[in-house]
Image (cartoon, rainbow, N blue to C red; front, side):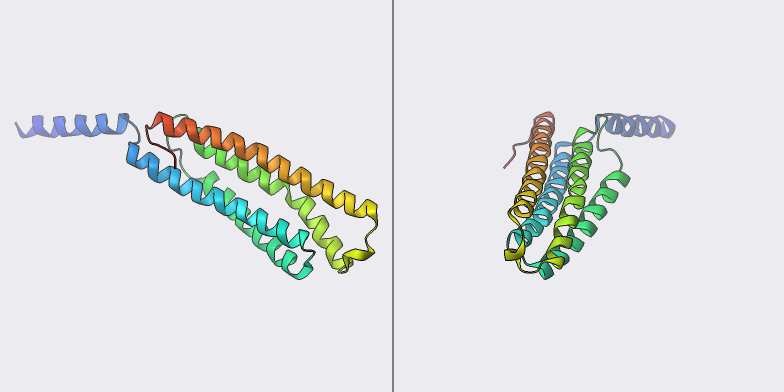
Length: 165
């Protein structure tokens, strides 16, 4: 009889594992990813603000925070185990972070220019237009990827049957 109880308990545990993550686990996972998504976007936004303000000292600090923060988040999500079989939400986060990370080259170039020309009035119109184009491209690229991320999040919430706030 004791052996039968052990077998039933083991079968039940196997059944629970086979069922996959619960709704509560999905909500917790969603909240964690959304917190990091907002932080990643905030790092980019802070850097963009200091560039638009032409504050070279602050931009250099924000660039370093941006680089370290995005790098740490990418590493975190690449090392994280899959949440479920499809793993679409975690991979959407990685994709968003990598798109944000790609903007680093544009940001670095602008911050270097800011260090070289602390007074923006000495910039030529061509320089100003080029900076504006770089910033617009960065914003547009991140915005497109963030919209893809949000669609994947909606699908994830629907799959695990919880509302998004």
